[in-house]
Structures are given as structure tokens and as C-alpha cells.
Amino acid sequence: MAKNDNPHALRLLESMSKHGKDTEAAEFAEANPLAKSADFNKKYEWAQNVCTFLDENFDDETVKAIRMDCACGPEHGKGAKIKALYEKEKEPNVFVEKVNKLNLGFTLEYDGTYFYLIYPQCYCSCVKRVDEKLSKTWCYCTLGYSKRMFENIFDKEVQVELLTSIKQGDSDCRIQIKQVNL
Image (cartoon, rainbow, N blue to C red; front, side, top):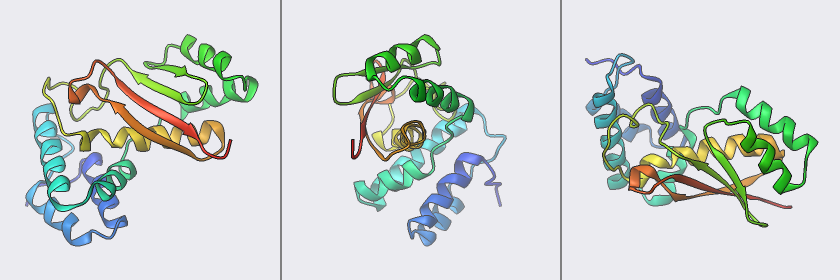
């Protein structure tokens, strides 16, 4: 039996189980193992299979929940730096300006209502080195990443929405972040 020890695969299977999809998780794991040692082409192929399987077997709400819950990170260091800035500067436009000066690999914008997290390139280690489009399903994980990071920064619930995605052919990845109960 092929190894299925890649952290991405393990998080996906755990998330599927968390959402009551144990049988489907076992079925997917058996048909689509992913080893730690997988090269970038194998990871991309696996990501395509994830998207196809989820899209064919679950409704969009379930797909989004599964993918959000299996997201990587966020890195504690980046989040801690941003949180420290937010605690010192609650005025949104000044906060955004200070975050952007950190050059963390993304920019932040504020339009008077929502924050926008903007990535100039795809950073996902499973798919970034293959220049092909991918189902939006794959990019839902960035919502989980963004939600966890900004709930920690703001110390309150946030809602997130994926507006654009490089893997969908857009020029950037743009996530809208709305603070709940302002």
C-alpha cells in the first residue's frame, strides 16, 4: 500500500472526518495516497484529484468547510507581528500602512468597510510550481488560513470570502475580511 503521510493529505483526511465524512476520507485516501516525498508534479495531480473528488461528492458549503479546516498555518511569527501592530494602531488605514511596510509577501487594503488580504503569487507548496488552473475548491484553504490569522489579530470573529485566485487565472489572490460584531 502506498504511503499517505504527507501533511497536506493528513489534514485533508482529518478535516473530512471532522465533517462526518469518514467513509469518503478512507475511500479517497486509498485511491489517492500522497507521500511526504512526493514531488511537485505528484502534489499538483493530487490537488486536482482532491478538487474533483470533493466537487463530485459534496455540496459547495461542505467542500468549503472541509478545505477551510485543512488549511496550513498561519505562521505564528507573521501573525504575532501583525497583531502587535493592530494592538498599537486601531485606525484601519494606518494599521494597513504599517502592515504593508513589513513586506510579508502580501499586501493589505481597507475600503472603509472591509479589509482585503492580497497575495501577488500563489504560495501553496502543492500547486505553486505548476502553471495551470485549478478548481476554486483548492483555494478555499486560503480562507481557513486567513480566517484563523485575522481572528487572532482582531480578537473577534471574521467572515472571509475568496474574490480572486491566481489558480483561477486572476492576477492575484484577494480575500475579503469582514469583522463580525464591530
